Image (cartoon, rainbow, N blue to C red; front, top):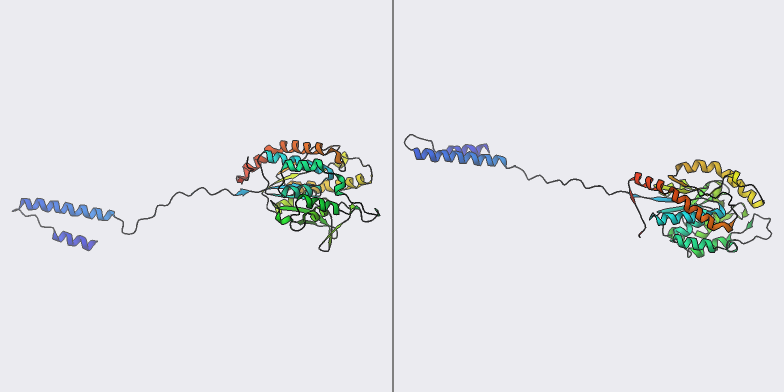
Length: 327
């Protein structure tokens, strides 16, 4: 550029006294040259810098709602009312995990059944369809549990756990190690049977060479397993009853009362990790009372309606995108 300037200046004619017009022209020439030089200096020497658009707002991460359904025998009908309220609110859990009675409702819900279908199934359920007496009855349990497994598989159209509409988890207790085990693959009815195998009531269930009994012994409300399956927000449904609210009666009631005592301290520990805890009011409703199923459903509805503002607040605080049911 400097060399170019020198050449152009050398070509500009010098102003003399004999030529006023030449001076004027020379002055115009100089002015033109400097104007051109100024223009050249304003032009960038390299390519133009690309225009960077403002960053777009990052897409919100989907929030996964997990439903943890606890055990409680006939009190498990309350889970149906809880699901009905979530459905009416347009909220769809992305996964469900259940223990004992909760495993049965979890399996049916994961298969794609609506709350209306769940309620119809609950009200039409006959105890004889899920009980098969052992003879003699003084063996390892009063019921084999095969009838329960068949009942579940019929309702889910024999779909395996891994083929459900939403991820399904079922919790049982390893009888030998005492550890809680999460089933997510395989025969759905067998998993529900294992999770519901109350010791001395149902015969332990053998799966891959190991025996399993009721999951409520070690995980009455499977909150930790909902987290393990990937839930960001866990809605835990606790249908257990305080031991003091259930005076012991017959042999079965004494056994269930024993589980209630054992589960009380475990529940207090596990429920701390839940975002929302739903506790249906089931006082006086015995675990073996299948005649009060409508009352249990209504109690589940009322409890979930009361907890709905808390759930919505937790979802808002999470700041993510919530999957909703289509109207």
